[in-house]
Image 1 (tube, one colour):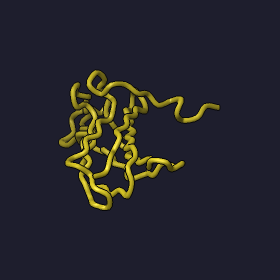
Image 2 (tube, rainbow, N blue to C red; image 1 turned 30 degrees about the vertical axis):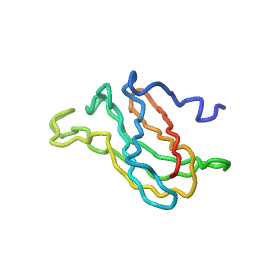
Image 3 (spheres, rainbow, N blue to C red; image 1 turned 90 degrees about the vertical axis):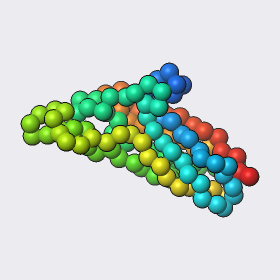
Image 4 (cartoon, rainbow, N blue to C red; image 1 turned 120 degrees about the vertical axis):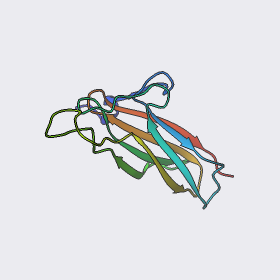
Length: 131
């Protein structure tokens, strides 16, 4: 039996449309909220169709010098143009982009995980230093 890590794919998000992109807005300060933007398809657009879409992005934080990772949030993208008229005939679909606010007490690494219904799990990480 394999660990889940064996099924997660990583790549450069500028060259691969499935990798979650993590953008930290501003200069994070200890104990103060800051914005984190997450998306998939930043440089290369990912399809948003009934047949091929991003289902979710999850955000984690690995504090420096601590053993365990902290789950910060799960962001679901539920509408993919489904309809009783057929695939891609629906009147709404979600773009895999979200903004959240985080407060950290120590530096570490933000880790994002995205799920494509066809191409599986993808991850990315971004170091966070605190002012």
